[in-house]
Image (cartoon, rainbow, N blue to C red; front, side):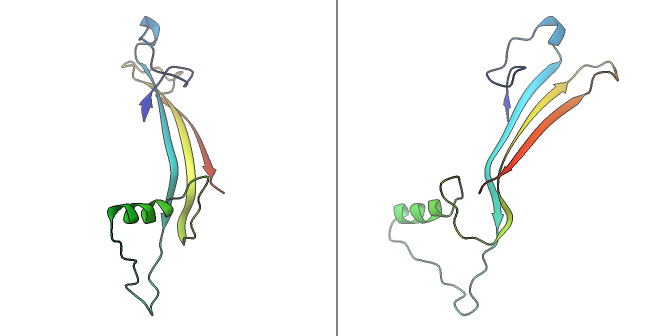
Length: 111
């Protein structure tokens, strides 16, 4: 979650008098996945042993899915990347012609 300018492409701008109560936020989620890999019933505790932290780190890095690496997993939620652009109107008066929150969302599956 980061604050941004009205074009959603840079740092937030100084608040102008006419835009004082409008906030622009950009949300991004990269390589999100949920997987379930139960142990083999015949070998329930077959987890590799590591001599160093570097070996453990390398093993865990290989299990992270991204555009270049897609390990074989039993995915509950397939790896996705999502972005959202939020315009939040924080004005205290009620004006039904202006939405309080406007959200533009995009979600991509990593293949």
